[in-house]
Length: 159
Image 1 (cartoon, rainbow, N blue to C red):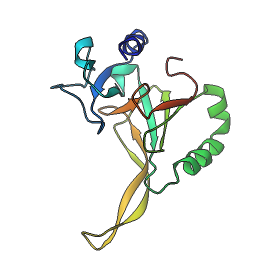
Image 2 (tube, helix red, strand yellow; image 1 turned 60 degrees about the vertical axis):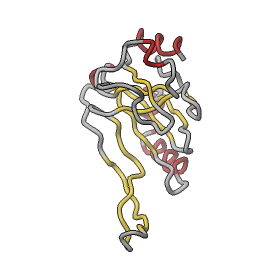
Image 3 (cartoon, rainbow, N blue to C red; image 1 turned 90 degrees about the horizontal axis):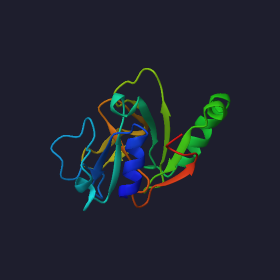
């Protein structure tokens, strides 16, 4: 994992150590990344800080709460096929069967919910909105390969 972190740093990506539940591991602050290699020693995996700290990288997060992440990603890619082919977006599969699509752009917003579906909430006895596509932008982060359960399916995050 340390070699990967060094590569990510060389390519201008700010990283942070994460626990298995995807939360930051043993860090007080992570907005600009964590540069001490020792912070990653007992971490479960690696997160990448989105936004300016990582050269304006942003992530579209296709959640798999309804077991339809692949279908949603496929439809999205079809709608943006020309852009997708031109910029060779990186796609990563997540531990829950969801997908991340990475890109860099000149303007980064915060974390935004782009699409939702209604999900039954037993506690409230009603349907509530559940995000199925959201961004990880300025002020956010996403977990990435080589964290267990995360695999790059297309491209290279260093390109």
